[in-house]
Image (tube, rainbow, N blue to C red; front, side):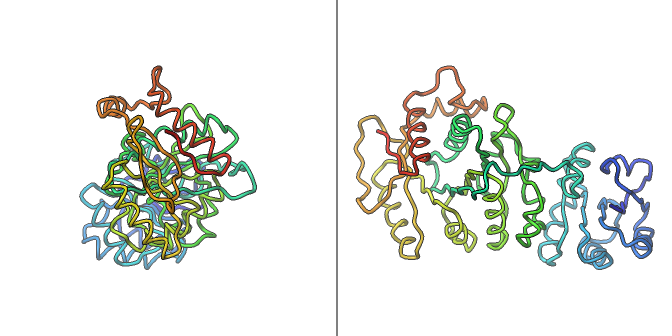
Length: 372
């Protein structure tokens, strides 16, 4: 692959590039324009420090010089990052990949390698020929989604080592999973140009982009919070369904009810609304479920924070996927602060673990699970 790099020092520029790549370096913006016309590169990497004019001037002009389908990878200065992102989005520029301004040299090289396909792809990207199941997890807040996503996929991965499982943190307002698993360098929005169409999306092995569990080789995580367009979200969900057996999407708050949320609800296989086991939360959930049922969307309830022996009435017409008990705030805080997975602790909360096992058992049998 012929890569044109715009960087002030030729000797250093190649240290940012993938090994075995064919690299040509321009040491000024003027030389860059000349080399583009001469060589028509297959890919371009630029460092924003090379341009003195405002981003809204140099970025569209630069993109117009490149071949239509050539990927443009931008390594920004911290002061430029947000403006470049804004200009690229508002100008509708395609095939533009914006790296984080906080990356080290090694991390920059790795991200460029991923984008351009220099990282070795795995031939077997699915454990079965059947499409996987996608679960959307939503709530009104503080209903236990994060705790569930930290613990339940680990249990599922242990029970079914032949299944590939991925957890996507799409909670843009409160990306707790990203902080817990340190997923900042595993951000799917970096590859946003790949989600333009399903053919482009399906070419990439997305397990290479995700963070693989250190102890469970069939379990992956990724930070996927972004202002996705509904079409991008559809392609993302569909290709992850092709490459994984179970996909858990932590969407977070089910409001505001955006167009993208509506697309999510209609695209995934199962919608789970996490609801605290108190009368006000249950009543609100029932209204929300009925409203979406009228739109042709089926949602199930996962009831959380249930005290031992506490009765609950949610309505005969509401499907309960599972019930998990309350864990004390101090116990949860201790676990989150130490980044400890409850089910891997020496003395885990037994009632919570038992409830997860019941849900896993029912999921395998394709039934709803209730544990009291």
